[in-house]
Length: 150
Image (cartoon, rainbow, N blue to C red; front, top):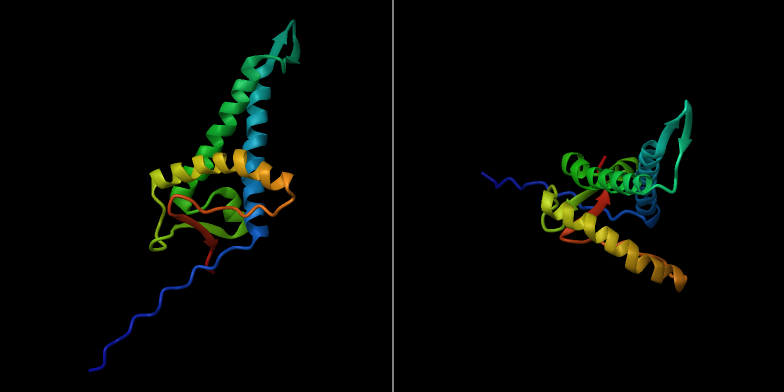
């Protein structure tokens, strides 16, 4: 009886820069808008029946920053843990996998990837923009972004 060969594992296709930038932009925009909305809600006061927004209050900016970071964490870590992609990646047709075997990413690797994203954004993106060079987004902590299979 001949040996039955298993089907080869599907190759993971690297996404285009346009897809990666779209996903990152959507994720950043969602966090920013939600952070600003939370900050605005925290800065609203009612004085003698008049609603006022006090943008100079530290409460406004603390709430905005906390909400933006919190939503970013939920989006990039918890949603990716559950669905293998953040909201932006889902819309762009991408997912996150382990480089070693293409499996699901783990919680601590996703935390590391989320933190690496801030490091990358603060340090490398301004350098690339200053020298008018393309910014190649990097995969980190043993995780990789690939196109979602159909």
